[in-house]
Length: 401
Image (cartoon, rainbow, N blue to C red):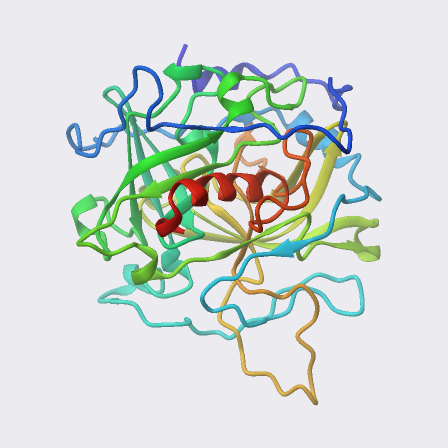
Protein backbone atom coordinates (compact mmCIF):
# COMPACT_ATOMS: atom_id res chain seq x y z
CA UNK A 1 0.00 0.00 0.00
CA UNK A 2 1.26 3.49 -0.82
CA UNK A 3 2.69 5.38 2.13
CA UNK A 4 0.15 8.13 1.52
CA UNK A 5 -2.84 5.97 0.64
CA UNK A 6 -2.45 4.05 3.88
CA UNK A 7 -3.97 7.01 5.72
CA UNK A 8 -7.27 6.18 4.05
CA UNK A 9 -7.40 3.05 6.18
CA UNK A 10 -8.19 5.08 9.28
CA UNK A 11 -11.93 4.73 8.85
CA UNK A 12 -12.85 3.10 12.16
CA UNK A 13 -11.89 5.97 14.39
CA UNK A 14 -12.97 6.95 17.86
CA UNK A 15 -15.64 9.61 18.16
CA UNK A 16 -13.46 11.44 20.65
CA UNK A 17 -9.74 11.45 21.27
CA UNK A 18 -8.40 9.21 24.01
CA UNK A 19 -5.67 10.04 26.48
CA UNK A 20 -2.30 10.72 24.88
CA UNK A 21 0.89 9.42 26.40
CA UNK A 22 3.48 11.74 27.85
CA UNK A 23 3.42 14.81 30.03
CA UNK A 24 4.48 18.42 29.66
CA UNK A 25 6.73 19.81 32.38
CA UNK A 26 8.06 23.35 32.58
CA UNK A 27 11.68 22.15 32.37
CA UNK A 28 11.07 19.65 29.56
CA UNK A 29 13.81 19.39 26.96
CA UNK A 30 13.07 20.49 23.42
CA UNK A 31 13.14 17.99 20.59
CA UNK A 32 15.63 18.66 17.82
CA UNK A 33 15.50 18.76 14.04
CA UNK A 34 16.87 16.68 11.20
CA UNK A 35 18.36 18.07 8.01
CA UNK A 36 18.25 16.38 4.62
CA UNK A 37 21.78 17.59 3.91
CA UNK A 38 24.13 15.07 5.46
CA UNK A 39 21.43 12.49 6.17
CA UNK A 40 22.91 8.97 5.93
CA UNK A 41 22.53 7.49 2.48
CA UNK A 42 20.62 10.48 1.13
CA UNK A 43 21.43 13.17 -1.39
CA UNK A 44 19.05 16.03 -2.13
CA UNK A 45 19.04 16.41 -5.90
CA UNK A 46 19.23 19.83 -7.51
CA UNK A 47 18.51 18.74 -11.07
CA UNK A 48 15.21 17.35 -12.28
CA UNK A 49 14.89 13.61 -12.92
CA UNK A 50 12.43 14.10 -15.75
CA UNK A 51 9.32 16.22 -15.90
CA UNK A 52 6.39 15.43 -13.58
CA UNK A 53 3.59 13.79 -15.54
CA UNK A 54 -0.15 14.32 -15.29
CA UNK A 55 -0.17 11.54 -12.68
CA UNK A 56 1.30 13.66 -9.90
CA UNK A 57 -0.29 12.83 -6.56
CA UNK A 58 -1.04 14.59 -3.33
CA UNK A 59 0.58 13.51 -0.06
CA UNK A 60 -2.20 14.97 2.09
CA UNK A 61 -3.17 12.45 4.80
CA UNK A 62 -6.88 11.97 5.38
CA UNK A 63 -8.87 11.04 8.48
CA UNK A 64 -12.42 9.98 9.20
CA UNK A 65 -14.84 12.83 10.03
CA UNK A 66 -15.21 11.42 13.56
CA UNK A 67 -11.73 12.69 14.42
CA UNK A 68 -12.76 16.24 13.54
CA UNK A 69 -16.01 15.90 15.46
CA UNK A 70 -14.30 14.52 18.55
CA UNK A 71 -11.67 17.23 18.78
CA UNK A 72 -14.09 20.07 17.96
CA UNK A 73 -16.37 18.94 20.78
CA UNK A 74 -13.58 19.71 23.24
CA UNK A 75 -12.80 23.17 21.83
CA UNK A 76 -15.07 25.48 23.92
CA UNK A 77 -13.23 27.19 26.76
CA UNK A 78 -9.80 25.67 26.11
CA UNK A 79 -6.96 27.83 27.51
CA UNK A 80 -4.02 28.75 25.30
CA UNK A 81 -0.48 28.52 26.70
CA UNK A 82 2.19 31.22 26.53
CA UNK A 83 2.27 34.75 25.18
CA UNK A 84 1.21 35.29 21.59
CA UNK A 85 3.69 36.90 19.22
CA UNK A 86 4.59 37.40 15.58
CA UNK A 87 7.68 37.98 13.45
CA UNK A 88 8.06 40.98 11.18
CA UNK A 89 7.39 40.78 7.45
CA UNK A 90 8.70 43.42 5.00
CA UNK A 91 5.31 45.22 4.88
CA UNK A 92 4.37 44.85 8.55
CA UNK A 93 1.82 47.58 9.10
CA UNK A 94 -1.60 46.75 10.50
CA UNK A 95 -5.06 45.65 9.38
CA UNK A 96 -7.53 44.41 11.98
CA UNK A 97 -7.58 41.08 13.86
CA UNK A 98 -10.12 41.68 16.62
CA UNK A 99 -11.41 44.63 18.59
CA UNK A 100 -13.06 45.35 21.91
CA UNK A 101 -15.74 42.75 21.25
CA UNK A 102 -14.74 39.10 20.93
CA UNK A 103 -15.67 38.89 17.23
CA UNK A 104 -12.77 38.02 14.93
CA UNK A 105 -12.43 39.51 11.45
CA UNK A 106 -10.08 40.78 8.76
CA UNK A 107 -10.46 44.15 7.05
CA UNK A 108 -8.20 45.00 4.12
CA UNK A 109 -8.15 47.14 1.01
CA UNK A 110 -9.59 45.56 -2.15
CA UNK A 111 -6.28 45.87 -3.96
CA UNK A 112 -2.95 44.13 -4.20
CA UNK A 113 0.02 45.48 -2.27
CA UNK A 114 2.32 45.62 -5.29
CA UNK A 115 1.60 44.80 -8.92
CA UNK A 116 3.00 41.64 -10.46
CA UNK A 117 3.74 40.83 -14.09
CA UNK A 118 0.16 39.88 -14.95
CA UNK A 119 -0.71 39.41 -18.61
CA UNK A 120 -4.04 37.59 -18.37
CA UNK A 121 -6.82 36.73 -15.91
CA UNK A 122 -5.08 33.55 -14.71
CA UNK A 123 -2.09 35.62 -13.62
CA UNK A 124 -4.20 38.18 -11.76
CA UNK A 125 -3.89 38.67 -8.83
CA UNK A 126 -1.74 35.59 -8.10
CA UNK A 127 1.47 37.19 -9.43
CA UNK A 128 1.01 40.28 -7.23
CA UNK A 129 1.79 40.75 -3.54
CA UNK A 130 0.74 39.42 -1.10
CA UNK A 131 -0.30 36.28 -3.02
CA UNK A 132 2.97 35.66 -4.83
CA UNK A 133 4.95 34.63 -1.72
CA UNK A 134 2.93 31.39 -1.89
CA UNK A 135 3.73 28.77 -4.51
CA UNK A 136 3.35 25.22 -5.72
CA UNK A 137 5.67 22.44 -4.52
CA UNK A 138 6.82 19.48 -6.59
CA UNK A 139 8.48 16.78 -4.47
CA UNK A 140 10.01 13.58 -5.82
CA UNK A 141 10.60 10.23 -4.14
CA UNK A 142 12.31 7.95 -6.66
CA UNK A 143 10.30 8.30 -9.86
CA UNK A 144 7.11 9.42 -8.14
CA UNK A 145 6.15 13.09 -7.98
CA UNK A 146 3.83 14.64 -5.41
CA UNK A 147 2.46 18.16 -5.14
CA UNK A 148 1.99 20.49 -2.19
CA UNK A 149 2.00 24.19 -1.35
CA UNK A 150 4.53 26.31 0.55
CA UNK A 151 5.11 29.98 1.41
CA UNK A 152 8.11 32.15 2.15
CA UNK A 153 8.72 33.31 5.72
CA UNK A 154 12.24 34.55 5.04
CA UNK A 155 14.40 35.62 2.11
CA UNK A 156 14.92 32.02 1.06
CA UNK A 157 13.08 29.92 3.66
CA UNK A 158 9.74 28.24 3.00
CA UNK A 159 7.38 26.89 5.63
CA UNK A 160 5.28 23.88 4.68
CA UNK A 161 3.94 20.60 6.07
CA UNK A 162 6.51 17.98 7.04
CA UNK A 163 4.60 15.29 5.13
CA UNK A 164 5.27 17.25 1.92
CA UNK A 165 9.00 16.46 2.15
CA UNK A 166 9.25 13.47 4.51
CA UNK A 167 7.51 10.11 5.12
CA UNK A 168 6.52 10.08 8.79
CA UNK A 169 8.63 7.84 11.03
CA UNK A 170 10.88 6.44 8.30
CA UNK A 171 14.18 7.82 9.55
CA UNK A 172 16.93 8.10 6.96
CA UNK A 173 14.64 6.58 4.31
CA UNK A 174 11.92 9.21 4.59
CA UNK A 175 13.44 12.16 2.76
CA UNK A 176 12.24 13.46 -0.59
CA UNK A 177 14.94 13.15 -3.23
CA UNK A 178 14.16 16.47 -4.87
CA UNK A 179 11.95 19.46 -4.09
CA UNK A 180 11.05 22.37 -6.37
CA UNK A 181 8.98 25.48 -5.68
CA UNK A 182 7.22 27.76 -8.18
CA UNK A 183 5.96 31.01 -6.63
CA UNK A 184 2.60 32.26 -7.94
CA UNK A 185 2.20 29.20 -10.17
CA UNK A 186 -0.68 29.47 -12.65
CA UNK A 187 0.25 27.01 -15.41
CA UNK A 188 0.71 23.27 -15.94
CA UNK A 189 4.05 24.10 -17.54
CA UNK A 190 6.71 24.46 -14.84
CA UNK A 191 8.82 26.52 -17.22
CA UNK A 192 6.13 29.21 -17.31
CA UNK A 193 6.34 30.17 -13.66
CA UNK A 194 6.07 33.98 -13.54
CA UNK A 195 9.08 34.18 -11.22
CA UNK A 196 10.85 31.00 -12.26
CA UNK A 197 11.49 27.73 -10.46
CA UNK A 198 13.51 27.42 -7.25
CA UNK A 199 15.23 24.25 -6.07
CA UNK A 200 15.62 23.11 -2.49
CA UNK A 201 19.03 23.42 -0.87
CA UNK A 202 17.99 21.69 2.36
CA UNK A 203 14.94 20.30 4.16
CA UNK A 204 14.47 20.75 7.92
CA UNK A 205 12.01 18.43 9.71
CA UNK A 206 11.29 18.01 13.45
CA UNK A 207 13.10 15.01 14.93
CA UNK A 208 9.91 13.51 16.45
CA UNK A 209 8.34 13.51 12.98
CA UNK A 210 11.42 11.84 11.49
CA UNK A 211 11.58 9.19 14.21
CA UNK A 212 7.83 8.59 14.42
CA UNK A 213 7.55 9.69 18.07
CA UNK A 214 5.49 12.86 17.63
CA UNK A 215 2.39 13.49 19.74
CA UNK A 216 -0.50 12.41 17.51
CA UNK A 217 -4.19 11.59 17.75
CA UNK A 218 -4.39 7.95 18.94
CA UNK A 219 -6.61 7.03 16.00
CA UNK A 220 -4.52 8.84 13.40
CA UNK A 221 -0.80 8.40 14.22
CA UNK A 222 1.44 10.22 11.80
CA UNK A 223 -1.53 12.22 10.49
CA UNK A 224 -3.06 14.47 13.16
CA UNK A 225 0.10 15.46 15.03
CA UNK A 226 1.76 18.32 16.91
CA UNK A 227 4.60 18.94 14.49
CA UNK A 228 3.59 18.45 10.87
CA UNK A 229 5.69 21.45 9.86
CA UNK A 230 8.96 21.77 7.95
CA UNK A 231 11.30 24.41 6.58
CA UNK A 232 12.71 24.31 3.07
CA UNK A 233 15.84 26.33 2.30
CA UNK A 234 15.92 27.41 -1.34
CA UNK A 235 18.92 27.88 -3.57
CA UNK A 236 19.29 31.27 -5.19
CA UNK A 237 18.10 31.75 -8.75
CA UNK A 238 20.15 34.03 -10.98
CA UNK A 239 22.10 35.00 -7.84
CA UNK A 240 18.97 36.32 -6.12
CA UNK A 241 16.95 35.08 -3.16
CA UNK A 242 13.30 34.37 -3.93
CA UNK A 243 12.10 36.70 -1.18
CA UNK A 244 13.96 39.64 -2.65
CA UNK A 245 11.73 39.28 -5.70
CA UNK A 246 8.33 38.17 -4.38
CA UNK A 247 8.56 39.19 -0.71
CA UNK A 248 7.73 37.02 2.28
CA UNK A 249 5.26 36.69 5.12
CA UNK A 250 5.64 37.00 8.86
CA UNK A 251 4.68 34.13 11.15
CA UNK A 252 2.97 33.98 14.54
CA UNK A 253 2.95 31.71 17.57
CA UNK A 254 0.97 30.84 20.70
CA UNK A 255 -2.37 31.84 19.26
CA UNK A 256 -1.43 35.10 17.57
CA UNK A 257 -4.67 36.86 16.49
CA UNK A 258 -6.80 34.18 18.17
CA UNK A 259 -9.47 35.43 20.55
CA UNK A 260 -11.86 33.78 22.98
CA UNK A 261 -15.23 34.55 21.41
CA UNK A 262 -18.49 34.67 23.31
CA UNK A 263 -20.22 34.62 19.93
CA UNK A 264 -18.79 31.17 19.17
CA UNK A 265 -19.38 29.21 22.37
CA UNK A 266 -16.29 30.70 24.05
CA UNK A 267 -13.93 28.94 21.67
CA UNK A 268 -10.52 30.42 20.90
CA UNK A 269 -10.99 31.42 17.29
CA UNK A 270 -9.09 33.19 14.53
CA UNK A 271 -10.06 34.53 11.11
CA UNK A 272 -7.98 32.50 8.66
CA UNK A 273 -7.09 32.97 5.01
CA UNK A 274 -5.83 29.73 3.50
CA UNK A 275 -3.92 29.62 0.20
CA UNK A 276 -3.22 26.41 -1.66
CA UNK A 277 -3.00 24.42 -4.89
CA UNK A 278 -5.57 21.62 -4.44
CA UNK A 279 -5.55 19.05 -7.25
CA UNK A 280 -9.34 18.91 -7.43
CA UNK A 281 -9.59 22.57 -8.47
CA UNK A 282 -8.35 23.85 -11.84
CA UNK A 283 -6.12 20.80 -12.17
CA UNK A 284 -4.05 21.96 -9.21
CA UNK A 285 -2.32 24.68 -11.21
CA UNK A 286 -4.23 27.76 -10.04
CA UNK A 287 -3.97 29.11 -6.50
CA UNK A 288 -7.15 28.84 -4.44
CA UNK A 289 -8.14 31.03 -1.49
CA UNK A 290 -10.36 30.05 1.45
CA UNK A 291 -11.50 32.43 4.21
CA UNK A 292 -12.79 30.73 7.33
CA UNK A 293 -13.03 30.99 11.09
CA UNK A 294 -10.47 28.66 12.65
CA UNK A 295 -10.73 27.21 16.14
CA UNK A 296 -8.08 25.99 18.56
CA UNK A 297 -8.27 22.33 19.58
CA UNK A 298 -6.50 20.49 22.38
CA UNK A 299 -6.75 16.78 23.21
CA UNK A 300 -4.34 15.78 25.96
CA UNK A 301 -0.93 16.96 24.70
CA UNK A 302 -2.15 17.30 21.11
CA UNK A 303 -2.73 20.86 19.88
CA UNK A 304 -4.06 22.08 16.57
CA UNK A 305 -6.30 24.42 14.62
CA UNK A 306 -9.16 23.41 12.34
CA UNK A 307 -11.15 25.25 9.68
CA UNK A 308 -13.92 24.65 7.21
CA UNK A 309 -12.45 24.42 3.70
CA UNK A 310 -13.28 22.86 0.34
CA UNK A 311 -9.59 22.57 -0.54
CA UNK A 312 -8.20 19.08 -1.10
CA UNK A 313 -4.93 17.22 -1.60
CA UNK A 314 -2.30 19.51 -3.07
CA UNK A 315 -3.17 22.27 -0.61
CA UNK A 316 -0.98 20.55 2.01
CA UNK A 317 1.63 22.91 3.42
CA UNK A 318 -0.21 26.00 2.24
CA UNK A 319 -0.24 28.95 4.64
CA UNK A 320 -3.02 29.75 7.08
CA UNK A 321 -2.74 33.49 7.60
CA UNK A 322 -4.21 36.00 9.98
CA UNK A 323 -4.82 39.54 8.70
CA UNK A 324 -4.29 38.67 5.05
CA UNK A 325 -4.46 41.45 2.50
CA UNK A 326 -3.31 44.95 1.67
CA UNK A 327 -3.30 47.38 4.57
CA UNK A 328 -5.63 50.38 4.16
CA UNK A 329 -4.86 53.93 5.23
CA UNK A 330 -6.98 54.44 8.34
CA UNK A 331 -8.09 57.68 9.99
CA UNK A 332 -7.30 57.03 13.68
CA UNK A 333 -10.00 59.50 14.70
CA UNK A 334 -12.66 57.41 13.03
CA UNK A 335 -11.47 53.80 13.25
CA UNK A 336 -9.22 51.44 15.18
CA UNK A 337 -6.93 48.83 13.71
CA UNK A 338 -7.64 46.42 16.56
CA UNK A 339 -5.27 44.06 18.34
CA UNK A 340 -2.58 41.61 17.19
CA UNK A 341 -2.87 43.03 13.72
CA UNK A 342 0.41 42.26 11.92
CA UNK A 343 -0.59 41.61 8.29
CA UNK A 344 -0.11 38.39 6.36
CA UNK A 345 0.99 36.41 9.41
CA UNK A 346 1.29 32.64 8.95
CA UNK A 347 -0.19 30.86 11.98
CA UNK A 348 -0.32 27.33 10.54
CA UNK A 349 -0.02 25.23 7.39
CA UNK A 350 -2.52 22.78 5.93
CA UNK A 351 -1.83 19.35 7.41
CA UNK A 352 -4.75 16.95 6.87
CA UNK A 353 -8.25 16.61 5.49
CA UNK A 354 -11.20 14.23 5.59
CA UNK A 355 -11.74 10.87 3.90
CA UNK A 356 -15.32 11.93 3.15
CA UNK A 357 -15.70 13.96 -0.05
CA UNK A 358 -17.70 17.10 0.66
CA UNK A 359 -17.06 17.06 4.41
CA UNK A 360 -14.88 20.15 3.79
CA UNK A 361 -12.86 20.29 6.99
CA UNK A 362 -9.08 20.64 7.35
CA UNK A 363 -6.59 20.79 10.17
CA UNK A 364 -3.16 22.17 10.98
CA UNK A 365 -0.52 21.68 13.64
CA UNK A 366 -0.63 24.54 16.13
CA UNK A 367 2.22 27.06 15.81
CA UNK A 368 3.49 27.47 19.37
CA UNK A 369 4.56 25.67 22.52
CA UNK A 370 3.82 21.97 22.79
CA UNK A 371 5.15 18.83 24.46
CA UNK A 372 8.06 18.53 22.03
CA UNK A 373 8.99 22.24 21.87
CA UNK A 374 7.95 23.79 25.21
CA UNK A 375 10.03 26.98 25.27
CA UNK A 376 8.49 30.44 24.84
CA UNK A 377 11.55 31.80 23.04
CA UNK A 378 13.97 30.04 20.71
CA UNK A 379 16.83 32.44 20.10
CA UNK A 380 14.53 35.36 19.35
CA UNK A 381 12.71 33.46 16.59
CA UNK A 382 9.54 32.84 18.57
CA UNK A 383 7.93 30.16 20.71
CA UNK A 384 7.34 26.45 20.31
CA UNK A 385 7.71 24.44 17.13
CA UNK A 386 7.71 27.38 14.72
CA UNK A 387 10.28 29.33 16.74
CA UNK A 388 12.45 26.24 17.09
CA UNK A 389 12.43 25.32 13.41
CA UNK A 390 13.24 28.90 12.42
CA UNK A 391 16.06 29.10 14.96
CA UNK A 392 17.60 25.85 13.71
CA UNK A 393 17.24 26.88 10.07
CA UNK A 394 18.46 30.44 10.45
CA UNK A 395 21.48 29.49 12.54
CA UNK A 396 22.52 27.00 9.88
CA UNK A 397 21.65 29.28 6.94
CA UNK A 398 21.89 32.78 8.36
CA UNK A 399 22.11 34.59 5.02
CA UNK A 400 18.97 32.84 3.77
CA UNK A 401 16.67 34.16 6.51
